[in-house]
Length: 135
Image (tube, rainbow, N blue to C red):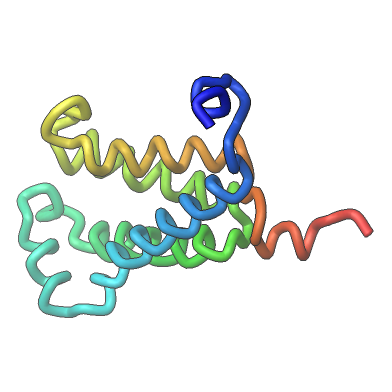
């Protein structure tokens, strides 16, 4: 067991990445669900960042919801990841202060997870594999 733990070889790589993809997708859907909550959206629209363009919170939360709903089952994974990367990078650097090492770590980490799945693809248990696998 110790030899396997100290080995540079992957452990449960496909299953582990699929599990993380599903969890990240669920978290992003959860954040995006606020687009369906008028009271919460009314709060976002009042933020100084959105005073000149009050449609942006709706676009952002809608993008989060849609991208998370695609990432969760692994459907059009790379498109979902580009949406996640763009949305959460915008949140980190334009809505937040851009201090991704401290204040804005949370959205930055979602952007990094987007990059991870952009490069790895959906791995196991995905609709992409079912739809686009060579037969």
